[in-house]
Image 1 (cartoon, rainbow, N blue to C red):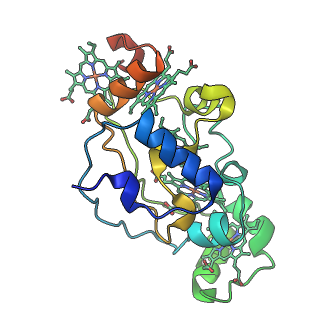
Image 2 (cartoon, helix red, strand yellow):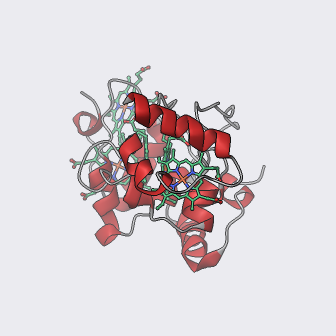
Length: 179
Ligand code: HEC
Ligand code: HEC
Ligand code: HEC
Ligand code: HEC
Ligand code: HEC
């Protein structure tokens, strides 16, 4: 069975570094079965925004380095651009976004990554690890190539968390992760 890391196509030096890290330090997680692709209320594409237009992950997920949750950007963050940008390839999707804005309504995005309720996962501690170099891609894969976000490369199981914690010398006491 191929490792999921090798199935993800990647480009660029940063991604290759991630692959090297994945092989050497973060390997060992069992491959997870492909998760079903979720339908989102608006067809938002990471490959357009983070790939083609190279918008930084934390421009939108700005809570990741200071909060437990990475956070999904509010409609107002989108409108900084989409008050003007019509979206040539999918103007009807941008129209839906503007309608939410006009009604003052949040978009009901479907969450893809979710740990059990009795587990705590603080993003800021992970994003800060390796002096700020523990890349989002280590856990979420090559998001900038995804048209639709999919759960890849990791199962969110206890074994996955604990094996990285042991490799990294991070704490592995039960109460570190469990409420
Ligand atoms: C920094 C500017 C910027 C921000 C912020 C931004 N977008 Fe976009 N968006 C773009 C650009 C550029 C395009 C491509 C436009 C084109 O090809 O005409 C685009 C295209 C789109 C499209 C059309 C489909 C596609 O991929 O071409 C949708 C839908 C969309 N954006 C939704 C959103 C949503 C939802 C948010 C907020 C979470 C958001 N955008 C935030 C710049 C932005
Ligand atoms: C223009 C804003 C924008 C940018 C830039 C962006 N994202 Fe997102 N992200 C979103 C929106 C909106 C959603 C919710 C819709 C979806 O799942 O596609 C989302 C969802 C996600 C999710 C799934 C969350 C969940 O569990 O439901 C992950 C993981 C993620 N983004 C990671 C990244 C990474 C990594 C990058 C950089 C490579 C990035 N994002 C860049 C707006 C953005
Ligand atoms: C060490 C692994 C790891 C790293 C690194 C990581 N994440 Fe996550 N991410 C997770 C896990 C686990 C969850 C589920 C968390 C939960 O349910 O509380 C998640 C959930 C999310 C979500 C949806 C729920 C939320 O927290 O708002 C988004 C968006 C997200 N991550 C974006 C990012 C971005 C952007 C980065 C890089 C700046 C990043 N993540 C780095 C493991 C990681
Ligand atoms: C890719 C490696 C990696 C994975 C996977 C990972 N972690 Fe971590 N985690 C770390 C590192 C490194 C630190 C230590 C950061 C620091 O020293 O501040 C950490 C810190 C933490 C902390 C704070 C520990 C403390 O001492 O307060 C918690 C809680 C945590 N992780 C939970 C989780 C959970 C739950 C999962 C799985 C859903 C997970 N982690 C997956 C690398 C990882
Ligand atoms: C680094 C984080 C981490 C540490 C440390 C950790 N766990 Fe977990 N644990 C998890 C995650 C994540 C899950 C959820 C797995 C899932 O939903 O598949 C979990 C699930 C569990 C479950 C299953 C609960 C259920 O819903 O079925 C038990 C029991 C458990 N852990 C006990 C422990 C004990 C006892 C320790 C200490 C020896 C410990 N855990 C240490 C992250 C951790």
